[in-house]
Length: 189
Image (cartoon, rainbow, N blue to C red; front, side, top):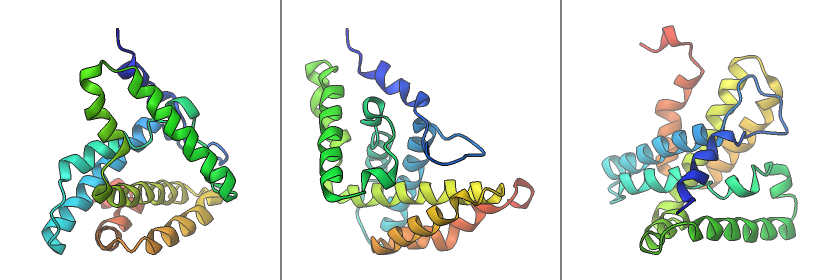
């Protein structure tokens, strides 16, 4: 019996943004889905507009699994995770161990595939990381739209971090798609 997918299904129970007051809770499942959609879009943008040769489907799958370690570790708040280099390095080790533990629950013939997905390939890691930051920006924009000023600095920080990534695909996404997330449904025409 393999427990891997039973663990993966528990992503719906992990809430993000635990140190902040939220108007709407965001589960790890919802976040991973959104990151997957955005990573796929960034790869398509890169291929279509920037002459890249990304695999958009692979980007989406890697994004679906990008935070699975949090099933075991929980969502470590960013201010703690990056408080100092020692904590950051220790947390990376914890994430690696959690991922290895999850992979150990798979039958041997599936381990290689899911190890590669969970580790991500180098070319697509930047796209997935940018999608992750964009998802955080979208969450912040949605909270601000609801009047929750708790997310104002988080939005500024994530936009700044995204800018520093030098990801032209993300820049295009922000320019063409980001503002729509702040609009009410009736204005999405």
